[in-house]
Amino acid sequence: MSAKWKTREQMEEGERTALASVAQKSGESRGRQHSEPSHVYRTEFQRDRARIIHSRAFRRLEYKTQVFLNGTG
Image (cartoon, rainbow, N blue to C red; front, side, top):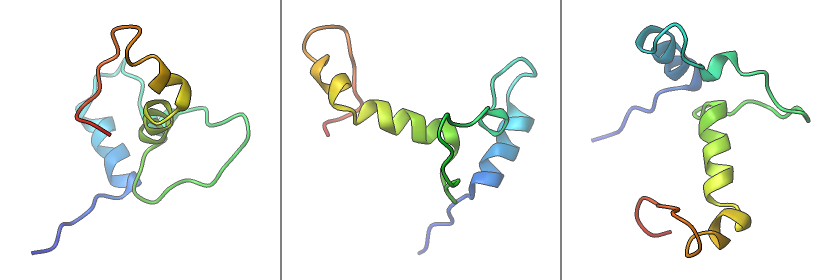
């Protein structure tokens, strides 16, 4: 059994059809201050989320404020 991964373009198309007209879509992102190549399987917002979750500064807040994580990691 093999998993079929959606490409970034497919996910962005899904956002355009499923989200409200006033929602911020990752395909309409203004990009980065310092440009970097797009990822094949991850949207810009998914990459941003991963950077925040795995940042040292965010991890330091874990026991100080109400920061909730999904699972351990």
